[in-house]
Length: 145
Image 1 (tube, one colour):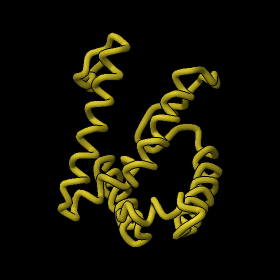
Image 2: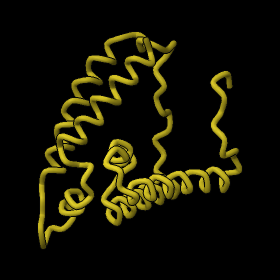
Image 3: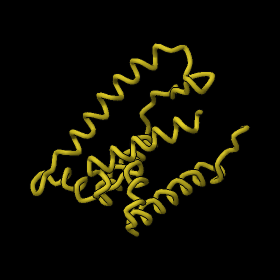
């Protein structure tokens, strides 16, 4: 059942990305082009996502535990350090250059454009490099760990 809900969630997310036009990097880049072809649609998509998330969290936090886990897995750190700021800056720079964030690029793979595959390959390499620099294995942890 857990897999079915994960699949359905991914499907709804992918459809939302496709319907909103956020698979098109030009649409995203136009959001950042305030002096030129400014397109506010990304702000409306983000606003809608924040509203749905706000409501969803209010409903979920009423439960003692999640549906398919023993406990909620919530970050317990609120430290703003150089790693967080640097990673956020790299994410924003990459998003501004490519016009994709990883969440929108995955459904965009269905468009068959080589640029999307190149972007996701670069994301994967960046993740692997970050893990290597932290002294961690680049292989995912097993489910039993």
